[in-house]
Length: 198
Image (cartoon, one colour):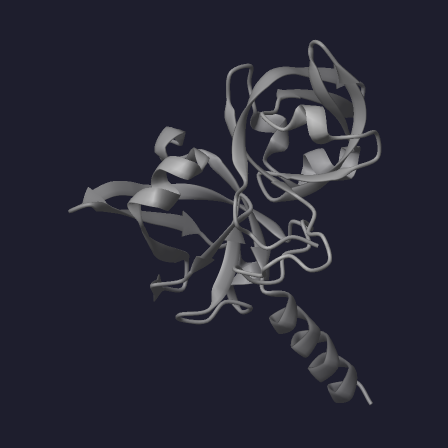
């Protein structure tokens, strides 16, 4: 379980294809505090530490992960958002984020607005109905509040701190983005679907 409050950013040192799978290696600021099997959200996708070495912290990407997320689009030097799994007793400042990507969209707008920035992302049909105006969504692992919502995209106002503390200052329009809808919205949808099926 994560909060969507990005702890640090890291850099991709390699993305090695292994047939339908891949191995992603990252330069992580808190690598010395990790052990094998730890969970780390990388751009909002919960991954398991598979190897720790001088060349970086490595994670195995399954075929499903490559199909559903934008992680396969990363290149050497790409900046990624990082968050370690919550510990019991931690403050909970974002929203419930599982690190289970629901859809992949694209960044459609990135522009300054005074000291802030405006960021918009496309919303695929399978996630749009789970979004509400002023509701929460995780984009590349960042817990954000939807400022404006249309049939095809969500727009966010980004504070200077979030702009600098995450990878947002390094992304480009058209770049892929991982989207995770609010967990409560997904549960409500399932409950209503089950009731309607009776």
